[in-house]
Length: 239
Image (cartoon, helix red, strand yellow):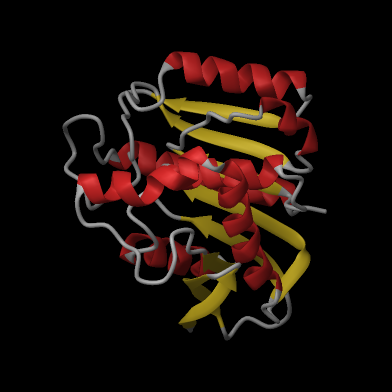
């Protein structure tokens, strides 16, 4: 049976509230997956993704970057609450690390088998976590933004990187993709980049309409990217 709970924790003076999911019928320790939310905050969509990961046998924890109760419903609200974290990557890394610490404390988690996934804004979160040198076996970005003010920090990445990208994503232009690829190559990171034809931004979020810009749900890309993540986890956790 999948067990879920909200967990309150702190990062500095901020009170955060994340969401944990795991199968309490599964014995022993298992890999832990940190989940980073979109720019509207840690809401129901992230909770469902955690439950899906728990059904695969992982312990999943959706971190809360923005703080308890800080959630957005409109586009301007999303811009407002996410802006400080795009600007201050040290703060973003600190919030990511605080969430990782919560995941590592869970008794069901094998601390030697940790990965992180992020959606949209969460893509930046998990990539910055990796660039900080965190001990994660792999990170997966779903239609995430790829830019960083500190590309040289890619040398700190300890695990593997998988980017799952919409081929016609207007939010992450080709120049940003090219800069990311250059960053990964120069740092000699073990990385993969998968581009899904016809997919725009936020292509995994089933709450969106299936047409429109800049964001729309693409069922085919959603299913393919989830399978790509599963294959990636099989690889990084094989040892």
